[in-house]
Image 1 (cartoon, rainbow, N blue to C red):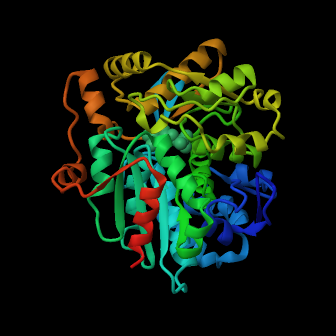
Image 2: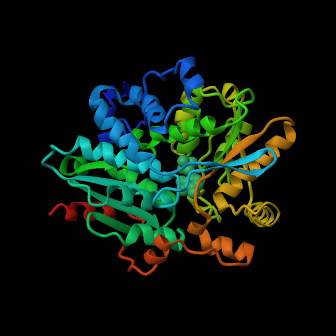
Image 3: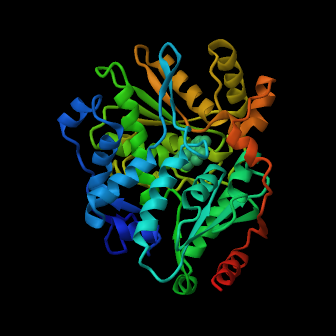
Length: 434
Ligand SMILES: *Cc1c(COP(=O)(O)O)cnc(C)c1O
C-alpha cells in the first residue's frame, strides 16, 4: 500500500516511510492510495473469527510488504491484548468500552501498534529517533507507556499545564528513562502548533531524526479501526447495523471508524459528539471550516480547536460535505448536559460514564429519539477513574482507585516547564542530542 499526501505536493511513500515521517514534507497528512474492500465472507465469518485473526486481516493491506506476516501478527496480538466489550446501558444504547488497556483510554491501541512498528522500523538505524507528541491528556500516557524503554527511541511529550487531569499527568511524567515531559504554559492547540512547527523546520529536521506520534501518524490512526470491527462482531442484530457515536477531539478515532465503513463494515450512521469545541458541528451546518481557540471543558481530551483528522474524513467523501452528511453528523454537547447525564445514568442504570463517553452517550440518545427503531453504540473512550477529579464531584462519592493508579499517584512528577514558544522547544530538542 502506498500513501499520498493530502496536500498532493509530496511523493507517495509506503507504510514504513509514512510511519517514520509522520507527516508528508508538504505538511499534508498521509492517506492510503486505495481503501481495501473486505469480501462478504469476512463479515459472514466475523463472529467465529478470533479477534487477532480479524484484526490482522483488517490491517494487513494497509501495511503491505514492509514487514513479514509473523512480525505483523505479533504486533497485532500485542495491540489488542485486552478486552474491548460492548456493555448494555439502556434498552437501545450500548457502550463500547475501549479503555481496558494499560493507561485506561482508547489511545492504548494506536500507541501500542505505532510504538511496535516504529521500534521495528528503526532497529537497524544508528541515529536515535525522537518521537515528538502533543497531548490534550490521554495521548501522552499511552505514547509514554507504548514507547517506554524501546531501544533507539526517545519520546518528548508536550502537554498544556493545568489542563490535564491528575491521573493523566502522572501517567506521562513519572516513567522517566527515555520519556521526557514538557509542561507548556498554554493550551493543547499551542502544544500542537509547536509540534507542527518543529516538523516544518528544515534545519532542525536535518539535525535530528524526528517523528510524530499524534493521530496524524498512520500507524496510530489505522489500528483504531479494530474497535469498530470488534463492535460489529459483538453486535447481536446483524440485520440492523448500529448507529455509532464517538466523542471526538482531533477526529482520529471516528475517522478510523469511517474508514472501516468504507471497507464494507455495516454501520447505520456515525455521530461525532463534540463538547464546546464545535468547529465540525458548525462546519456541517454552514460548510465553513473556521478553526477556533480551544475552549477548556470537563472532557479535556476533546478540547481541540483545529481537528487534524477531519481532512481525512472529507477525503473519503471527495471533499463533498453533503455526501458526508448522509452517513455522518456532528453535534455539540455542553458541560452541563454532560454532568447531568453522568449523574442520571449512574443512578438510573448503574453505569458510570467518564465525561468523554457521556458526551457520546448524549449525542446518541438524541439521535435515537429522532430515529425510532434504531439502536446504537457510544464509544466509552476512557475509564471514569482517569477523570475522578471531575466525576466524583458529580456523583458525590468516591470511585475506588485501581491498584495500578493508586501506585502511580505516589510517584514523583518529573517535567520541564516551558513557555508556549517554539524557539524554546527547538533548543530543548537540540540539547537532548548530546
Ligand atoms: C483523545 C480522546 C478523545 C478524542 O479522540 P480523537 O481521536 O482525538 O477524536 C476522546 N476521549 C478520550 C478519553 C480521549 O483520550
